[in-house]
Amino acid sequence: MAGRWFDEWGIGDRIVHEIRRTVTETDNLLFSTMTHNPQPLHLDVEAAKASEFGRILVNGTFTFALMVGLSVGDTTLGTLVANLGYDKLVMPKPVFIGDTMRAETEVTELKDSRSRPTAGIATFRHQLLNQRDEIVCTCLRSALLHRRPG
Image 1 (cartoon, rainbow, N blue to C red):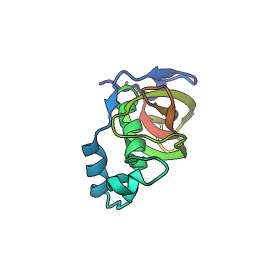
Image 2 (spheres, helix red, strand yellow; image 1 turned 180 degrees about the vertical axis):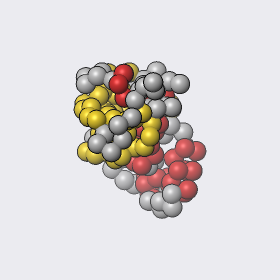
Image 3 (cartoon, one colour; image 1 turned 60 degrees about the vertical axis):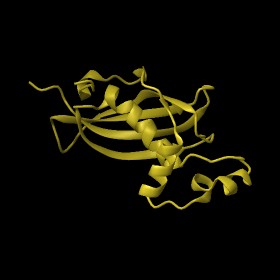
């Protein structure tokens, strides 16, 4: 199990996640079509060329999902009860096909669960950065985590 139990986290804990991921045209195309997103900026090369970006823009919901996915192995894998919510989602820079993404996480809040004595709520601030170390996505994720058994 790679994730940490609730009681193993401390406020201010930081992780630079080792896994990196280069975004491909297939990633963007499949995600956009599987989620029924017909935005021409994601699917139409000619429309994208005519935009201020001049090329295909990667679907923002894919960008968000990739950020969270890159963090799971080091944060909640095997210890998660449920994700409770995502707040303050911001995408300050665009992502393009061929960009290589990496994620960082910081614990911003820890609190006991009132309804589950064997769990607690951790709030993570996730950041997704490109190969130029520009922040392309950030959010707060609240996760209900199991405490260490026994």
